[in-house]
Figure 1 (cartoon, rainbow, N blue to C red):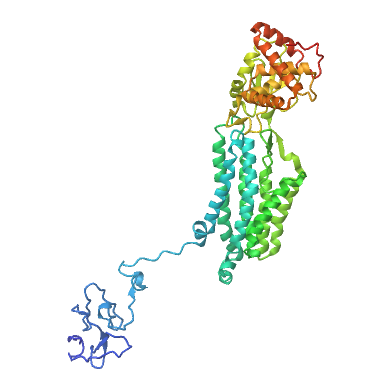
Figure 2: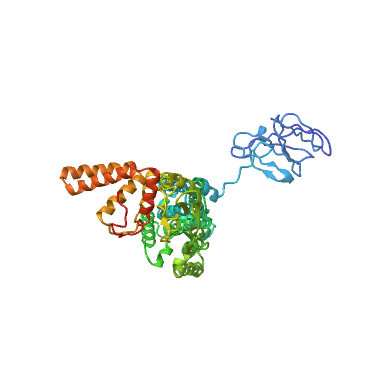
Length: 552
């Protein structure tokens, strides 16, 4: 193809010279001579276009942009005029700049920047799976013991703390150790060392997402457990500082394990950390000395009678976090001496825990109060830590208190203060620990509970049985006050065994008890109340004279 030059300007019109591009050079470029003899002008014609004023026609194929002119009249060819082998043409961008291929004309979009490495660790790395694993590891044992903690804030606190100490702490150490040895297993240690980030930033970018996921799993189980306890707990409240301290301690254990895995990048590091953490926490937690308070997450609050001092869990978390920070700085800091600062904080927290000892727990003021029902005889009082149990206990003892209505010489009330009863009081059968007599705010076996309450009225603290005639009378009174089908079946089995063994003495005792019970049952209400009044005048005496106890 030839370029036609129109006459104009200085030189006469002439016939242009056709020039072919050698292979490997810029194909598609043709030269034309204009602007006078001996002058050359290079240009490419794409169809018909307007004159540029120098005698060169600039045209553009449909759908293509025309190339820019050079200062001396040179025009760059567009994509339509390029032959095979021509280098790609850069197009002008905004402000006179140039764009790469595909970026002009609004066709191409700028590629999004690569996601931050921390985002990948948060969402697609090992951390989310570790968090899910800890969640499953905690849910099963906590839910399996639901009967023992639902309805008691103290029992719930102890259950969550024990689970965190014996499950979450070893799990966090093992997960951190496995994460710390990741680069060694993948053989990317040199690649990691060649990055621009400092070793401290690299370690924290890999360890913190794991620590946060494990702490979040612990908190999620805690929230679910507290929500399951709330409908049945009638006094007190959750110990929020204990749960916050547990979560912080677990996060610190994850970082501590990561530092250990980075320092010793072996596959056995993770299981060794798990076993070592379990044994250490278990050994410290069962110790009788004050060193037991150094066990991670082991806040030993037993029942509702004790409360943890508010700063106890936070100082315990500082003890774990200080060790983790010291390990990280000793491994990655430019100046290793900076690790002494968190180590000093950890040792100070440990010294405070050990020196305080039993002072880390204080008495619950509610445990020294009672809530009573004065409409019964005797009165029924329950401890102030579970006042919602009063209607349930009163209902379980309604048969016993109904039979004692109008009887003289009875104790004033059933008390529940965890101490020896005063004169005129009798101990209420134990409602603690939760899970035996009481489950989810209900008395599990009301008849058995009433039978135990009746035994509290008749010589409860006597180690040695009185004379046989008094024993027979006591048995008849107890059978009438609180009949228990389970006890009657057990008594029948004892009688059958004595009959098989031909134990005449035991059989005679059973017959005497049955005779006394039949006589007591056959009395009229007034006669029975009068007889029971004389009987209960001696019921608290362990060794009364047989003549003092009315017979049946």
